[in-house]
Amino acid sequence: MSNPTKVRKNDSSVDAWAILFLIILVVSTAVFWVSHQ
Picture 1 (spheres, rainbow, N blue to C red):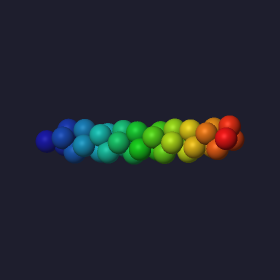
Picture 2 (tube, helix red, strand yellow; picture 1 turned 135 degrees about the vertical axis):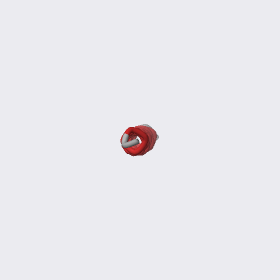
Picture 3 (spheres, rainbow, N blue to C red; picture 1 turned 90 degrees about the horizontal axis):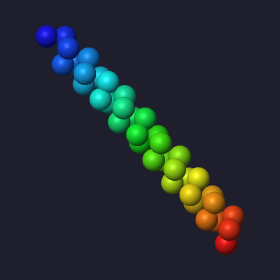
């Protein structure tokens, strides 16, 4: 019965990494766009 909580914890960790990746992607794109204006 401890497996569902472990899976849920892993999912939240993956979500956090995905959000972090998206933020970095957006910031890098904005910097690239501004620097080429």
